[in-house]
Image (tube, rainbow over all chains, first blue to last red; front, side, top):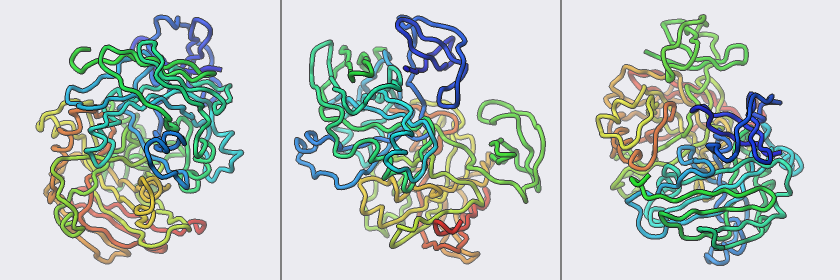
Length: 255
Length: 255
């Protein structure tokens, strides 16, 4: 099943994604069994970030080849960081590049686990079961700010820097897929989703030793490859078995 | 006016705090003008974190004497970080020290700004106006983890490490107050709230160059002093003109 959120008359609504339409729902599938209350065509839908998480977790260095390429040390245990909800935007909405950004402005294609249950001290098996489904994230990054600042506050969390969507896929073997990055339809990079140092379930086991995960929390799993993006481009992140997250890039003030 | 949130029959409700009672409200004062729907006595109330923020911002090094004491460089511009909602707990609820924590386990008393309006590219004057009110935070920290880990995920964001309350005070000159830290009623430290390198409004001006603040977002302003806390203790953070945030400390498994 594929779930998403769309804006209908300025109101955020959950939906179930079909072939051409989105069936609007009475509530969140994370809270129970919502009923159908209407339909909108996908072609004209305004897609929202698939969920607004209570906590927005993100993994840094986690793909082997990325770590080797960066000359960084291989992590010996799962350690998680954070991103911020203000930066979220939906499938189809613009990534706005601030005028002050200099240097490399890049896309990072990521697999995202969406948590469906409240869980603490999860076993590996419980960690598998607490994932409601999978979506796609683009961890847009301004590298000069990333290196200048003490935190990732503006390098990775400026408004619109975190596209997430287009939907949550509940039926997919997420670690046996391929992530593909394209700019204006042209291939930039591809890598196996599963080539991680620690998989999402290992992260959940470690994290929930000390913290409670809640329904709607998201865990972005890092990227093996990145690519440059510029105003005027459209950047697509595809994960086979899930879908394609596509966003135009605009220069601030040109929206 | 003082606003808070309490648990009533397992449900989170907003309230207006009076002398001895809390007047329960029909909704959030951040969304409009809620009406009174009942009353509970303060003495038996179960206090919740005063708000669950869309984004939980936290300032690191910001008090002059703390920075000098740490031998750190004086910041030249406001840079903000993040904490996580899973760690929030209310006034009166226990801070649970994990069994795995070794070394210094400390309280950090902080002034907290609660945002009341959606704001982007705020002027200093707009920054002043977008603050709905002020509350108190205790940025509980496990120092060994803080130094061992790449992020603050478990050192500062384990469950219960972020008490916030007891209420939001809307009528106070928050930067002209005194923050006092006590353990079991004994004085540990005190400092002027306003002795900051950058005040909350300067942070908001800088932050909103790149991000949108939303109603309910919180900005924790850092601490000048810290102190050790141990299971069995009760730690109080008082800010004159606001109130006292008090929490017992328990060893995990002894709750």
